[in-house]
Image (cartoon, rainbow, N blue to C red):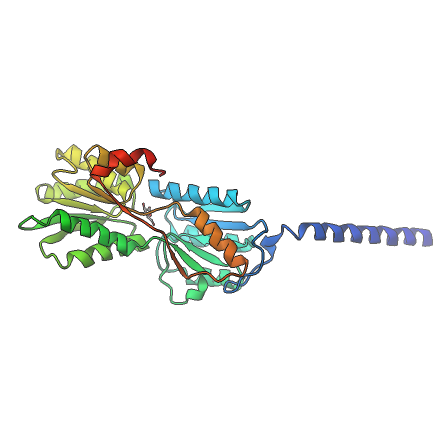
Length: 339
Ligand code: AHR
C-alpha cells in the first residue's frame, strides 16, 4: 500500500514537471492568449501574432486586391490570419468580431461595411483588451478609444478630385451639364464621403447638375442595372456619369453601349479606384478618368499592428497616398498596374 502511494506521488511529480516544461516552451509563441490594452499595447512585436480580419466582402476588383494585400502581408510577417468575408452584411461583421474575441486574437483588423451601429461590439473588443484597427473605412462613433487607428483613403478628397476634373473638362461648356450618379453601398463611408466631396466642388458651378442619383452597391451588376434605368427614363439628357467606383462604371458602360450610345464620348465617365478594368476601359476610349483609391496597404497595416503591440504611439489617422489617371495615360500605365 505504502509502496503504491510512493509510486503515485512520484508519478504525480513527474507529470507536474512535464506540464511545467510544456507551459514554458509554449509561452514564446502564445501571444494570442495575452490580451493587450487597446490604448497602450505591450511588447510582443517579435512574436507570431494571431490577427482577425473582418473584410467587407468581394464586391469589387478593389476589394479583391485589398484582401490579397492584407493576406500576403500578414503571411509574409509570419503571423496567423483568421479571415472573415462579411458579404456586405453588417450582422456578419458583428458575428465575426465576436468570434475573434472568443478566440482571443491579438488584434482585429476591421473594414466596416457601414459607418454606424458598431459601438457595442467594439466595446466588447476593448473590454477583452483586443486592439481594433480600422482598415479602409471609418466608423461614425463618438468614443474613439474603441479603435487604435484608421488606415485608409481620404474619400472626401477623392470626390473633390473627381469633381475638379469635371469642372476643368466642362469649363467651355455653356448651359447645363447633366450628371447621373451611381452611389456606393448606402451608409458606407466611401459612398457618403465621395458624394460630399463631389457636391462641395460642384456647388460653385451651378450649371453642373446631378439629375439622378441612386446606389449601385459598388458592384458591376447593380451598376449596369441602375444605369439601364437611368437611360430608360432620361437617355438623351445624360452628359456625365459619376460612379463611386470603377466596377459600377464598367457595368454602366455596358448598359450605355447596349442603349446605343458611346461611353466616354456621348456620356463622359468618371470612376474611382483606378483598377485594371478602368485602365482597359480608358485605353479603349470608353472611360475618361479614374480617381485612385489604393488598396495595397496590407504591409502598412501590419507595421501599425506590430508598432502598437510593441508599445509605440501611432497616429489615430493614417492616410494612403493617391493619384488620378486620365484616358491619355491609360495605355502606357496599364501594364504596370498591380490591381
Ligand atoms: O471602401 C473602398 C471602396 O469599397 C472601393 O472604392 C470600392 O470599390 C469598394 O467596394
